[in-house]
Length: 533
Image (tube, rainbow, N blue to C red; front, side, top):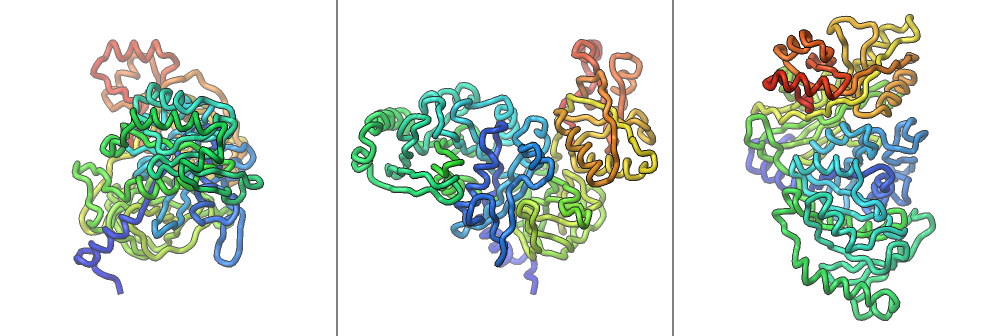
């Protein structure tokens, strides 16, 4: 029997369940080890018995966060993935994000659903361009950040140098929670500064299973590692004098970050990181709304669609909308209202998602991510609610910087061509632009980076049987505008007006000079880089 959502008992139940949730994303530069860290968190969280193998009931199936064919071919993540697991009576919703710059928009959408983020840094390279870009997005959303300095078993920056680097580049206060013993490339273990215990690590074959670990007091550490312990002890004394304790308020707003050192590939320090996520990351938080006041967690059900993915199961050509539960209790089969359309939507086919695998889910609570199957009516940024109307703040998309025209090479598949393009645009794989909003035989594909076009071409061929040709254009800049701005752009001749698939007006410009001249001549003209959905 369903308990009424408004009863005190249900509100208390929702609050208790929300407190058990940790919904976090991992952000990093390509090749920093994000997919490896994801798998190792699953290993230490008990979701997998060996890295790369998921235990599903009595059977086992191969599973990593990179499940798309093009990801396996290229060895990079091109789409975000949801991985849900339970550990120590806590529900973790891990949102794995693409590391490559070209897929920044997917990461932007995922951060709209996260309460915290793990910022992964390469010990040798530190903060790189893509990390900086994603950090800025996280800070703009006041998302708390936990930093993991990875690959410390390889040559890299000295740990004190890394702290200084983080502070200078990101203008954030780093607080080391663990401290490495040994130098980069000769990593012996870490000291947990909270307990003052030394965790001495030993390697396992291929890092497929948990690393052997010996935990001892500092006095014993000096006997275990006599050649490197004196340096670590001296550094720890310096840290105690400079870094007294983490500023909790600064951490909560993204202005201070606890720092952990380790090696994901060797499983060094991963368990300490997972424990920190459990203990330090915020539980499910109320989400901001266009009504200004955040919706309370114990309010009637509401959720935010932050991602749409089609054909996760090619056999059924399905379409899954990823819904972050924001308030109340989700119950399979319930009827909600889509705030964008005002129409009812039945949540009859809902799943718990783990990579490309999924299983039916009967209920979910704030912080959880639900995969809504056959959700043709849902779009990225949609709000679903029950009873009290609400609409969550829009998820912005980034102004594209690369543009190509796309032509169908098989005229017998015109419908599939149009359907495929529309679907990819709705998912946010690419921006679909047309000079004429009704008909354009050679529409424009736009994206943050050219790899988005590779994904689009691959999926058009694999999923819709449509071969296409891409041709370069001379545009380099796109800005959102309005009807008044559109008329000015038409008259000026400095840019070209196009319509995005959702009706948004965009001005395209071939050079920064022309864009700046238009801005100078028309200072009140709307030319926005953020394209709110």
